[in-house]
Image (cartoon, rainbow, N blue to C red; front, side, top):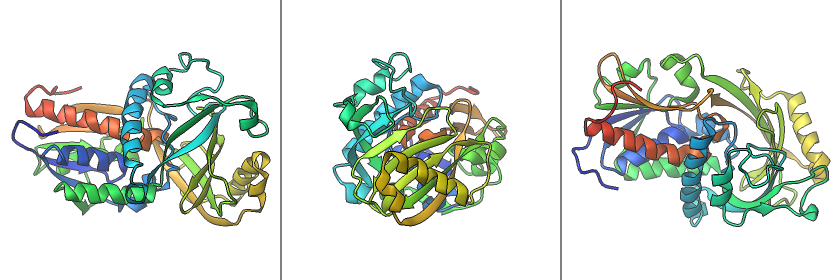
Length: 342
C-alpha cells in the first residue's frame, strides 16, 4: 500500500514480533520508521514463543479472531519460503481447548466460528488420529513459525523498507516522541511501567526443547485458563515441549521440577518422549492484559501515540492483523481524523 499524504517520522517502541510487524506495515507504506528496543529481537519474549498460529489467551476474542485470520493469511503466504521466513505449514491436532474448545460444535459457542471458517480443511479428528487420553479434537494445517528465524526475517524486511532498528532504553513515551510525529507503543510487558498500565502482567511460560524422536505434527491440549498445558511443536532446531501458563509469575529461570513435569505430561500421550535428549530449557513472560490495547491517545507533549500491547500468548497469531490496524490509525492521524484520546 502507498500513502497519499506526506510520510511521517514514526518511533516504534519495542522490537518483538508486534513491534517489528507494526514497523514493517508503516515503513512499507512510506513512513520513516525507527524501532527503539532495549533488546535484540532474539532476546525478546517473542523469541521464546512456540510459534503456532492459533488464537490463545487473548481478548477481546471477536477482534482477536479477525486479527488472527489476517495473520494466518500472511503467514501462509510466507510459508512458501520457509527457510527465508521461518514460517511453515504443518498439520496437527488441537484438543481440550487451546483457546478453542474441542467439543464446541461449529465454533459458535467459543467465539471462534470465523477462525474455523478461515482455516482450510479444518475438521473433526477421527478417533485413530487422537493420542491416548484425548476424547476429541480438531485436525488442521496451520502456520508453525520458527520464531528466531522469523524475527531475523522481519528485521531484514524492515531494513529493506528503509526502517532503522536502534538498541535503546526508552525512559518514557514522551522521550520517544520528542523528535517524532507519531509514537507506536509495542512495549509488551514494559507497558506496565512505561504507560504506566497496572493491568499489564506476566503469564509465565516454561518449555523444554528436546531432540525430536520423529514427531512431524504439532499437538496442543491447552484449556484457555489452565496453568499446565501440553503441546508439542516440531521446529527445525528441535521438538518444543510445553508448557505452563502461570499468572503474575515473574521469574525467567527454568524450574527443573516443572521441566520434568512438562516432559512427563507429554510422554503420557507420546511415550517416545520419555527417552528424548533435552537440548534446552526456556522461559518467557507473556505480556497479558484483560484485553489488548489497540488505540490512540495524545501524549502530554501533544504527540499522538498508537498503543499496541497486551497480546498475552497470541502475539505471533495476531501480529499482522494488529499491524494493519496500527497503519489505519496512523493514516487517520495523518488526515486529521485521529481521536485526541481513545
